[in-house]
Length: 66
Image (cartoon, rainbow, N blue to C red; front, side):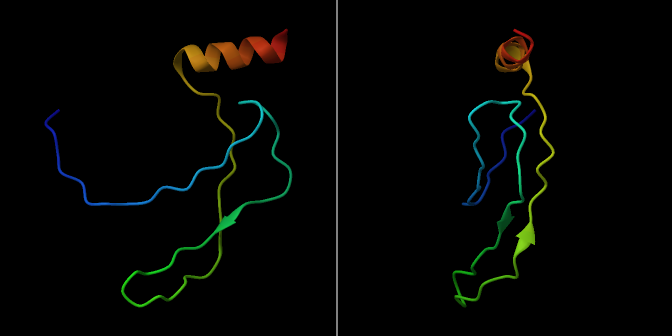
């Protein structure tokens, strides 16, 4: 795969104490346009928890079982 240029961007994240912890409630986010200063409406985020791949996922699964 060839390298591609990407413009600047922001990425929000949600953390929790354990990779497999159940998330109660809901998370919402909105963004603000730099040029106009206007905010978008609130949007609910998908909180479908998926265990990471690789070593991190194996360690998380082991903690849940053991």
